[in-house]
Image 1 (cartoon, rainbow, N blue to C red):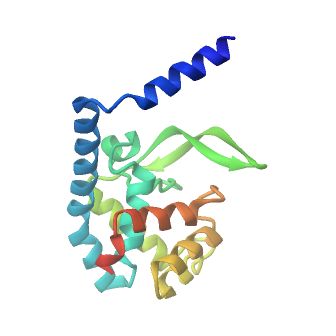
Image 2: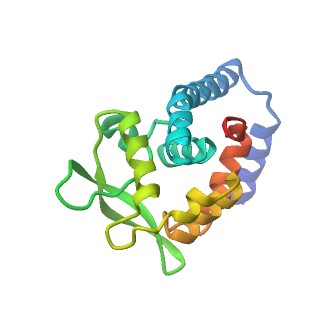
Length: 183
């Protein structure tokens, strides 16, 4: 009976028109997201000219990984891409979700700390260009990709993230915000 009451209550809520406050919140959130992207576009284009990384991939990953600059890692530590810290670099330890053995688990991860979002974008690009010390060609296919779909799939294949839907999420982000217009 309790479940039925909850269901009826939720149906009743769905049939109610959105309030002006709810509409304003959605509009404000959309505006913030567009401003975040707009702020990163010029530097993403510079990185494309210098290194060949598609701006849509830079922007899509930044939006996805940082929740449009709103995550703690992005807002406090200027890390837009969830880049892990190895060696003697500025870092912070934070909880992170990883997909292991067919399930998400929470672990502590060491993440790079940057002085600015542009520095984070630079390091992200250099990760693609130089790879990692144990595999310098790890992200080579991302640079060789001719379009954002191919690049997103190359990121997932290279193991950039543990999420099995990572490429699809980046592609969705790129298409939802028309980020391919910057390529």
